[in-house]
Image (cartoon, rainbow, N blue to C red; front, side, top):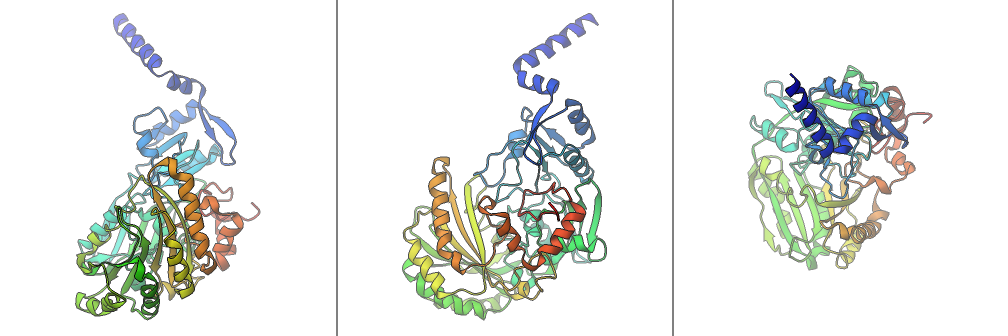
Length: 492
């Protein structure tokens, strides 16, 4: 017994000597940041209790897996939470939210981890990590799906397409389902079937006081309304239920590329084509610079219907000028969803600004083409089709206000070297200023919120702001969930 005691004490001494910081934290507590930005110290006993309550892991900076868990898609943000709760289920989320609320901690929520704005990770607070909650269950008879908040589009699309079903969601397969849907959810099939949030049937939500509630059109209906486009302001969704649509597994689509010198005339022709295109046609247009190449105009297409019909519908795109490359062809939808994955690879550094267009104006496209030649290759302009089914929903029917928009517009700046941060952010801002006079509002999923005033954010919710504030006041009166395009509680 004495030998075992001695050996145990020796091992403990070696462990402390090898990692003195961990010993100090265990004895004195964990330094953290409060919801309002104040420094605080989390008692070690409280952390031990939280760890015991979780089925998943609770990670501190000294724990294995911490650095991997804190990373998000946008490498421009390198934040270090005090605690990371890797939740295994709704009960873990309830415990984590309750802990954050009771200690008045700064709280961030990580779903799939794209987080263009970087706010799914927080400096010195509690990061609630849902990445392990990524299950997808398809009910082919009911044409519905249950999807976990950590699921990526590739997982959702893959499971649904196995049954010839789909929900419109995004254009990059490693996007998280949760953040995309809560912010609206523009995708290749949205003109045919609506936004991702339009296809949300119900959700299970952990509110700021740690309760789990169910939201649908008949239960907590105001919360359900707010989840459809109001972002992560109202709680942590632990399960999504989606409506599915029958869709061929192979669709017609892919890129067609024009040289920059044809861009003015091609974009003018595209504006006319886009205004009269059927709902089945989706076109994402990028004025971008491929690696090692010259700046070009890329049309990324998809036709949500029979291939023969798609050939006729997309034929005008081939006649706008003389394409440098035409790669439109039948392609599995799940493969089509991956075609932008490398361009928007995880870990690169991104600065994005967005807005909405009622139509594509010649004055705007001419200004962009003229400005593009002087920009560094890191900067791209993009137009994503809306209209169709997305515009046939009243602006007040869901929290997503920008229903009249015909196009979502994006300035995307992408680079790799931290030494180039200042130069590229300045270039992105300059590019955005060229297009800003033509834009209304912004898409909350495609924006760097550090540039935004609260007044700008409020204006973006338009006529829905007052109702959103009322829902916020009911479900999150202290604004625990404020790392987002924030809706403030009333009297905040």
